[in-house]
Length: 93
Image (cartoon, rainbow, N blue to C red; front, side, top):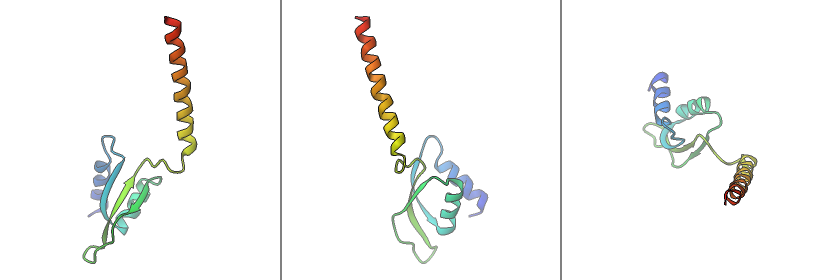
């Protein structure tokens, strides 16, 4: 597959809010994924076969691992907003 065709394939694979896919790719294609999406989490899920040297990979464009401080900040903000909403409900009554 030509580089432009592969880049189009990747863009279409992760369009419309899709951030996780399982794709069968060669090492060269994996290198292209890493270039196009440097923060993606890529996990090999099968062995390559001899015919095309391709293997299955899980590709996650929004991995949570390593971002626990962001998740904690979101949880804290949600808790704060819930308290504020409850206070507004009590004030209304």
